[in-house]
Length: 391
Image 1: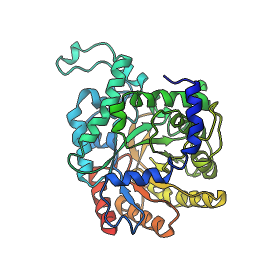
Image 2: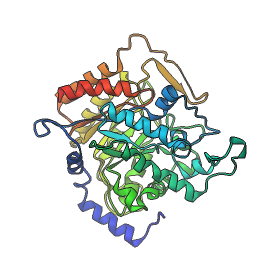
Image 3: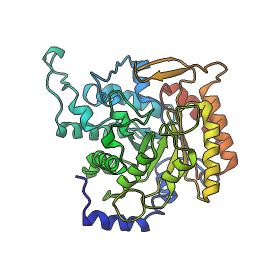
């Protein structure tokens, strides 16, 4: 349970001394778990997986809807573990060093709004909804499942945790429009802490998690909230924060400039939290669920902001949409043609060029690169082949 106790405050104070451990050294220790040729000679470039939900839709004919499957790809934790495992394995086989769990849109509200799925009865006989206890069990089950996808291969497991808006119906992580009660850093912190506690509460499950991925955050107060939520964990984990930039103004959906985003991500100053001490620093920051065409300018803005703030950049985490010629309508929940689709090159070629440019400028501790919506195993395989040849 999330609570502001003496123990929490003491742990928060200790986190000041652990701030360095929450940064780059923690990621360096993670690298011992995977095989990277010439690791000592080059800063690491790690391959992340691709779009889980859209791969399920495009290659496995899985149908999602807010009404019937409010937890989206997490629904398969109840309905088809075999299919989910097959998709995870396909990304491992494509060359992914890091696999994200099927928990992006998982939440208590989502599962308790989902009709119980029992393979032993017909659809007409199914009834009732999942309990809170069952919801927690289903969410935790994503971790050993994703871990098993590596088989005998080495790899890192990232616990995928989407923005609060990703669990809303319809989802609002692209707009950042939250209900009034969630327009407060403390309430967002409490919500994220409660969800993380589902996983941390089971030590065996938590031990399987290599790092936590906070994804598609559309607001600076939510960026602050997740850092504060990580601060109260009894067993710390390295984590990354990635945000979404869906609009042409290169700002967060809440209107924040990149300078404000970077400050919220890495600044060692207390925010609106009632906790004492500095929030932990992410091992990676970056951009996801954003068009490839926007990446170069956004990355350079992050680099310029870091120079202005005189801060060292952690790993760059980069996993944009694979749908260069498509865009997602959150109202209809369908993909359609993008208005600026003309002249778009191959996704993996563009990503390789961007990674190469970032590496040449040498501003980041390392790079994690993969894909988001509409990025299939084939895209990751082609990108992985290019990157690993460069390694």
